[in-house]
Length: 179
Image: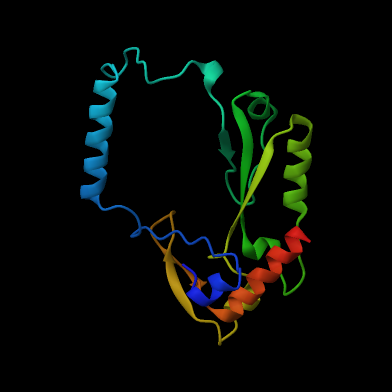
């Protein structure tokens, strides 16, 4: 989350994935029960049987495929040929886009754009600020915290989302990407 002052200045908020955030288990159980009741009321059947809730394949649309791995894999020709896939989400680490202060490497973004252009698919770019460049992490003035990692349950040090030094550099990255 960004501080109110960073929101007022139009800064791009960081994407921080913290496992403890989100609905409580009680809310999730209630939501699942409500959805099951809705499925039953709408004529849904038991698992494995036909259902009125599943649209025919021709009605599927708006699907975005997610990139896998680091560096992310390019979308396959088979994926891009699927008519219901409208776009591709490429997820990159900040440190890979800016390996040194002010030195940007957008080659992976350019490769994905080149792969998507012939198919007319859209691109969504996700930059994980929790994987900041070394020069940001080595700055003693940058406030840091530990983010839980998906793999192995460890932690990854990252700048706090409201740190002014990190926000200034993250904002510079976004200006470079869009400029």
